[in-house]
Amino acid sequence: MNKKRQIALLGSTGSIGTQALQVIEEHSDLYEVYCLTANNRVDLLAEQAIRFKPAAVVIANEAHYDRLKSLLSGEPDIKVYAGARAIDEIVEAGPIDAVLTAMVGFAGLSPTIHAIKARKTICLANKETLVVAGELIRNLAAEYHTPILPVDSEHSAIFQCLAGEGDNPVEKILLTASGGPFRLLPLEQLATVTKADALRHPTWNMGAKITVDSATMMNKGFEVIEAKWLFGVKASQIQVLIHPQSIVHSAVQFEDGAVKAQLGVPDMRLPIQYAFSFPGRLHLTGDRLDLVKQPLEFFEPDLDKFRCLALAFEAIRKGGNMPCIVNAANEIVNRAFLEDRCGYLQMADVIEQTMHRCTFSASPDYDTYVATDAEARRIAYGLIR
Image 1 (cartoon, one colour):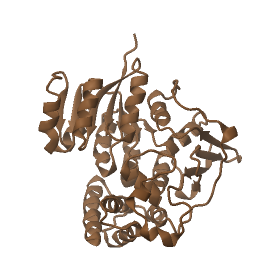
Image 2 (cartoon, one colour; image 1 turned 60 degrees about the vertical axis):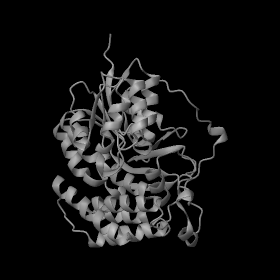
Image 3 (cartoon, helix red, strand yellow; image 1 turned 90 degrees about the vertical axis):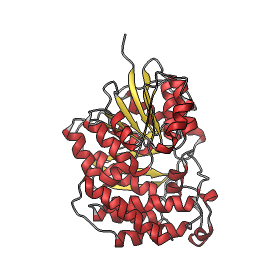
């Protein structure tokens, strides 16, 4: 009898984490949850633990430890831990086969590094890891022979298009974007949009942070950086296309002019499951694509309207720790926007000013990234206040 693959879910209470649990439940003969982690949503974490019976759970915010311990008092076989260091340590556990990194933001970097060094397959849903420290992660993955399987729908699509292509040179990557809720809104009206407006994504159901990043298109800028490191291409080889239907999840153009694309209904369970099952495919319940009923449209992004996307491209050109600076500033303004402390257009202003004020390093190491993240957050926070 084949042993079930043991999965560590980092960020199990978020959008990706909850859908990953659906995939595991649908294929419970193949996969088993080894550990679950969350930041603050202690009640949902406890519910998940009671349902899936992992060996361990970790709550990153140590203030919630006693409550989590109490909620799981009837589950003596589940070990309960708290704190960021506990997450770093749990991913190294011997039985784990794959680590799904679905934590939000910079916090995902350290446990991903620990998992790579422990030679766990990385199912990468935390795009900030490659945005902040792409070169470091790429080099570590090569050194420890650790596979990194993308879970973002766009990067999974590119990965699927490249499967079976061997060393065939890539001419261009076509990275699609829905355009978010403000695609058709004139620039002058963006000054008055609210967080409620930004959170009404037209095609995807995601967490608040990534939904706001999609509304500003910073999310797409991050995905360009991520694609650069994942697939070994130059930023100049990546073209962003607005595709409102979110059916073509991305495409690859080869040197003979052929374009391969991955299409499907918007359903994050598919890329999650593909990362778990690669190179095989498993049955997945859900809707199927009907191209007869579905027009496909593509447009160039408006970089004057979506300044965050332009700033991300600027960060790629600058290199070094500049993407780390942009990520840190973006996390601050994103949270401030969600808390009504920052306007929509002000987000790009603060990010740009932080890029100019923060200490630049052309050849950062891990400690530099940590220091840069802290400095950029302080600067951005001060600019909002």
